Length: 163
Ligand SMILES: *[C@@H]1O[C@H](CO)[C@@H](O)[C@H](O)[C@H]1NC(C)=O
Image (cartoon, rainbow, N blue to C red; front, side, top):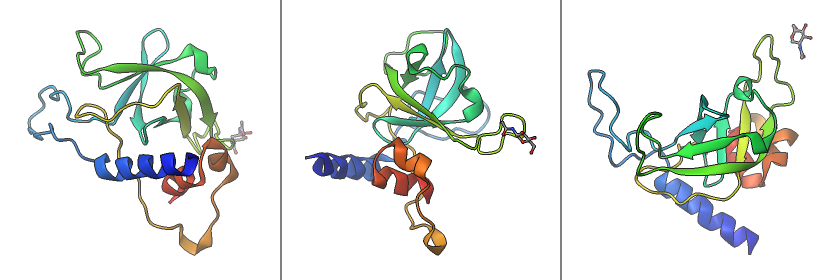
């Protein structure tokens, strides 16, 4: 059942990732219309702290330096949000069940500045909420998936993330 669920999710990710049906790509510096960047996630402690990127229906990728508090319950994530100061009719929010910071993150040099946040429950993809595409090629030189990413979830997600 788990692998069937995974196949469906991966199919949906491949179908929807990287597409923004409402993005008309207007050049010239106006506010982005709703739905322009549907993988954009707003990470909140008591207010907006950082952006994140939706990479599946339940994982958000961000920078390790954004994890000001390494406690899942401290965070609320807003997906489909258009503005930090107005109504957001297309938005959904999620709490977190897990945060994974790269174990070799160096907060002086900012090496390995990457972290993953697991949503408390999956989101449905809409015109305003959908994942970015990650490279799908196989790793070069037969490099194995790093353990820290394996810990993040499934081998398949790891595969997508790592490559
Ligand atoms: C970060 O890198 C610097 C320079 O190599 C090193 O001195 C420091 O111990 C590292 N910090 C951590 C937390 O690993």
